[in-house]
Length: 330
Image 1 (tube, rainbow, N blue to C red):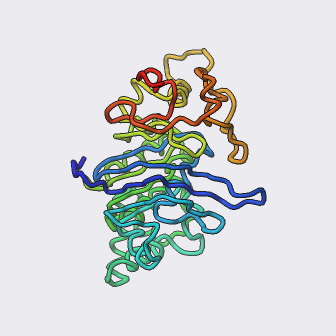
Image 2: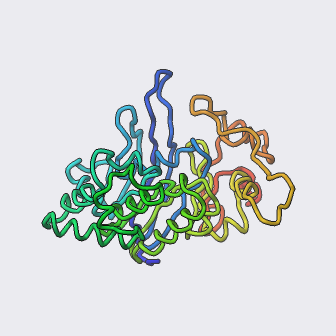
Image 3: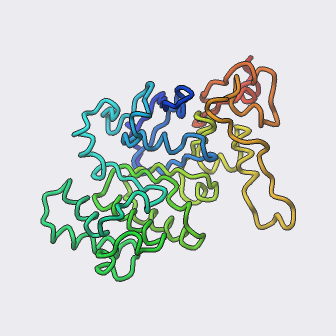
């Protein structure tokens, strides 16, 4: 991991809302984090917490409208992506910022062969011939472990298995050597064997200077891949800590609950612990802390005010009144 003081990516106080028939709903509320070169940062939480909206707002892939950035900055290599002209942003997408989407069947064009899509990706950013781009595509399909890569270049996405489509998506995301890789739940639709292969592949393919934002709801994937973890709940970040520390000593009750709900071999026939209740809908968020209704440690002040996301100890941030009390704050 690079020790450069300047982060590769710096997201500051980002808020994103969506227009609905019932009014505007805030899907991302004041999110701040950074990623250094060579660092893998995991963004974890239940479905509907705002992980994908956060990730897709970085390269401005969220449709606007109905989406709208309410405020904040997204600085990539010192440039604010939210203020950047679209023409300049298009030059960064693919070349400097690669994206592995959650479901490649909807991300890949069903009307074009895999080879055509790879050639287009290359030629949009580099002045090379179609033949050279095609040969490079074949090489990358081979790199990601797709058998008969020359033949697969002629295939349409629906002719490939889920694992092969995801491998092709990884090849397309990394073929230009991006500085930042955003992977939005890249293994969700895969069986456990293919999931392990895809994670190994992403680890091998990622360069030493490439930062990665890995979005998932699977804490096992976080353990396997990440240097640092961001925990998100109901549109807000609630914890930020080094991966090993968050597993050994979670600070936020939500993080603790996520870890307890992980299946383990020693559990035997005991019931797997679950988190009571569900993530509140964006149009019915509770007053105060969003997790208060599901928290086993809830206090009166949790229902009256929202805890500030702050540094509670060196290198760790948390949004919980319980930790403020333990730190000796009123």
